[in-house]
Length: 129
Length: 214
Image 1 (cartoon, rainbow over the protein chains, first blue to last red):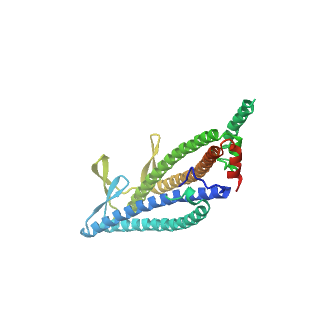
Image 2: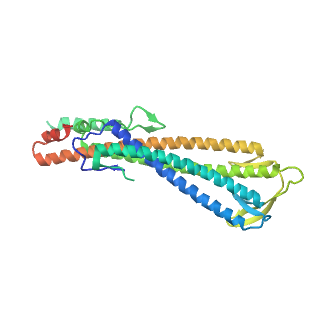
């Protein structure tokens, strides 16, 4: 996002409100990127946990499983580990849902700001990511 | 004769520009950037190159500050992840130990002895856990106490993380404001130069027509 140099439209004067809009846009953009990053990370974790869950199914029912907590692997029963995994996956999914909702909201206000700013400044302002 | 007022206006410009960033409100040590409303007037009062130099310096200072804050945020996020792991471990220990009665079993674990080397350990059911508080101090707590302490630490870190995030977005606002100012001063300067080129001798006149016509 930037303001192009050299060819500011003569006659177009930037007001305090325009500046505030630009700031708001930039803040939204930063938050959007952060949310995207976080969603990616969660999704990766969900994939890993689901893979682990799939592997568990292949095991005997009474086989003990090592589950990693912090720096330690704890020997646990298969049912307990399955339960823990599923719980973690639910938590992660909740996070993803929350992020997606916020993302949609942000994108909406970004579109609005984009329309306003482009209408006024045209090609002299670049709001692409 | 002409050099005298020029000099005084230049030194005035310096003062004025230096005072631009230090708006009256300071947020956590971050000075507020002031939006320059009437660019033609500001450029007319101070020389454009001087303004550009000062504003870029300010912009760089903000950027430097931002870098520090982002580093700060990253380390706080790491601390939160660490805290969550610790809390999870204590909760797991507590859960496994509270299966009291006859079926209390030792907890079998493999713990990391060194990088990539794991050793087997058996933890007998216990209601105590030791927390490393830092500064070479380790204190024994009951599980409940440990959970409370760790949760409290976690929420404290979360609070300073929130604060840092707020600081970062405040800072980015100031940075943007400054960059917008910078671009506009620059554009104004370019246009003034162009009209000097076009109109030759009557630079002031050109400036007046192309810019004050709104």
